[in-house]
Image (tube, rainbow, N blue to C red; front, side, top):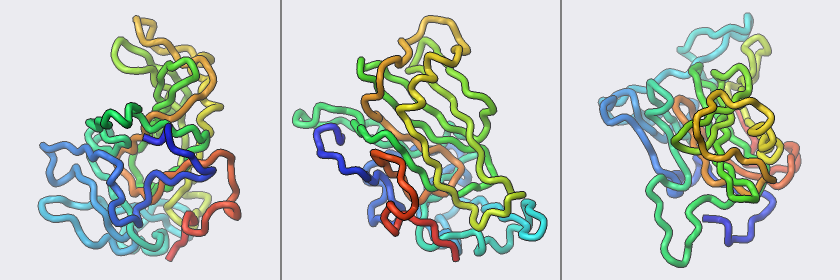
Amino acid sequence: MFSRAVQPPILSLFSSTSTECLSLFSVHTDPSLLSDSFVHVLDDESSQPEPPPPKTLIIPIVFDDAAGREGDTSNTNSFSISGPVLHIQSPTLRSGYIRCPPTHWRPDAAQRDRDLGIKLGWIHVQVRNMGREWCFEVGVVDQTGREGRIRCSTFQTQPSVRTGPRGSPVLHVPFRFPSPSSRPLTAWSTISQHIPSLMSRFSSVPPERTSPHAPLPSGQFSHISFVKVYATCRLRRIWFTAEKLDASQEPWEFGLYTR
């Protein structure tokens, strides 16, 4: 998708403020859970417009300012940001997500490459903590063509590698949203991961399964092949950079501005 393009130092893959924010993504929901599994664009502060029936929004958590605890959900404005965001909701992780490139994307003859082909090493995801388990996944390819998946999740406590007869190996990387006791100014976070430095963990962390499986990525980082963001969360932006940047070096619109 991007392998033949000149890639700038900052490359934006998703922005909820775009008119067609899901134009490069496929959407996956559970058709048996019409009221609970869906993707919807709304304003983060007001949670409007509401999705059409029978869909029912999950109310975002807020924190008790004084005690640093999860508190009353009747007033979420102080933890909200300005503008539209993408609400991804489902009772289980596997049944709700967005993916780029789209799952059934088939390029024409002039576009033989079927993955993202992004060579920038840093990925940044702006996401709202909805008080539920959540993860995102990045497909990676090393210089020898070996593929793997890096899954960053709130429910994993230790790094692990899972292999099996189907699919590419998965490196699980734990992370945590800011603790309520730290009294964050917003429920939103920017999660940044340096993908090349994580590649070595495929071989340094003992795999949980020893059955026949695809070879582990072992060479240097080549490119990112796909990105998946799972339920349940609110998503504002996904972008890539060649280097780690501080806030002053990023475009102003990438900042998180609370109400």
